[in-house]
Amino acid sequence: MKFSIYHIEDWQNIAETVVAGLQHPVLLLKGNLGAGKTTFTQFLLKNLGSSDEVSSPTYSIVNEYTTPKGKVYHFDLYRLKNIEEVYDIGMEEYLDHAFLCIIEWPEVYEDELYGIPFHEMSISNTGDRREISFA
Image (tube, rainbow, N blue to C red; front, side, top):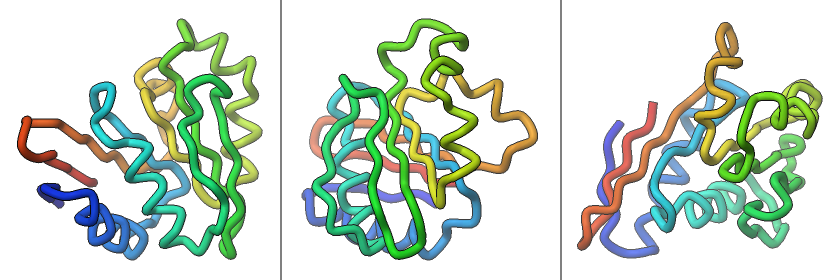
């Protein structure tokens, strides 16, 4: 699916569509700094019924949120340099106990997802809008 974002409120329609289409416990979020990955996550968690305050996990690496469907873990792997650092944070444990794991900057871990079904969202900022692709 492809979407265009012109205003912050447009994220709501995308979040609703993604929630309705979630079939896998992992969502990879790709996009440059400032593309809107955390903003999307805020809308997504609200649509999943969470009342938690959603913030970027840039410094904490992982944030945990509660939803009626179960725990959602939001990762930012930007600062991790190699796969060993991903293992050190206990990624497999999170994957085993989550309703959903949202992973920003997943490239360092992506090869390890072989055989695990996941969704992928790419966000690109074109200046006047953002282009979103969700699979």
